[in-house]
Amino acid sequence: MRAVPVLADVGDAAAVEAMVGQALAELGAIDVLVCNAAIRPHRAITETSLDDWQPRCSAVNLHSAFYLARAVVPAMKERRRGSIIAIGGQSSLTGRPNTAAVTAAKTGLLGLVRGARRRAGALRCPRQHGDSRLHGYRAALRRVVSGVSARRPRERRSS
Image 1 (tube, rainbow, N blue to C red):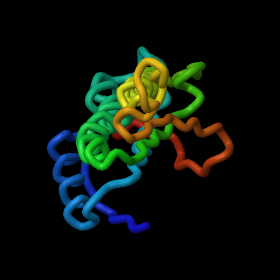
Image 2 (cartoon, helix red, strand yellow):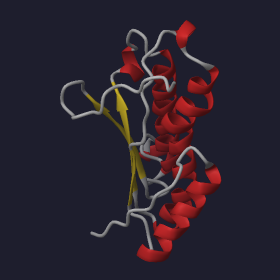
Image 3 (cartoon, rainbow, N blue to C red):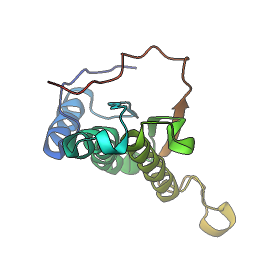
C-alpha cells in the first residue's frame, strides 16, 4: 500500500479537488479515504465568534469530509471498491460542555457518513436491493474516546 502526502486547505472545495487530482495522478486510485481533519474551539456558545463557527469549525470538521467524499466516491463506485473512514468523537453522540460548535459539526459528520453508507448500499436489505454493497464502497465513522489518542492542546482564540 502506498500513500502520498498532499498539503491542502480541506475546508476549501477547490483545494480538495486539486489535492485529490494530484493524489490520483500519483497513485492511479484511492482505495481508502480517512477524514481526520479537525479543530476544537472549546468555548461557550456566547463566546464562540462567527468566524470560529463558520467558516473555521464547520468547514474543517464537516465540509471537508463532504468535499473529500464527493471527490473520491465516483472512482470508488467505478472500481466497485474503497473505504471512507471519518474520525469523530463521543461529542457527536453526547455533546460536552463548551463544545457546541464542535458537537454540531461532528454530529453533522455522523449524518454525512450515515447517508454515504446508505447510498453505498451497506445498510440496504439484500432481499430488496441485491448486493448489500450496491456501489462497492464502504463508509464508517470511528469515534475516538478521550484519553486514547494524543491530541494537541485545545485551540485558543488568536489575539
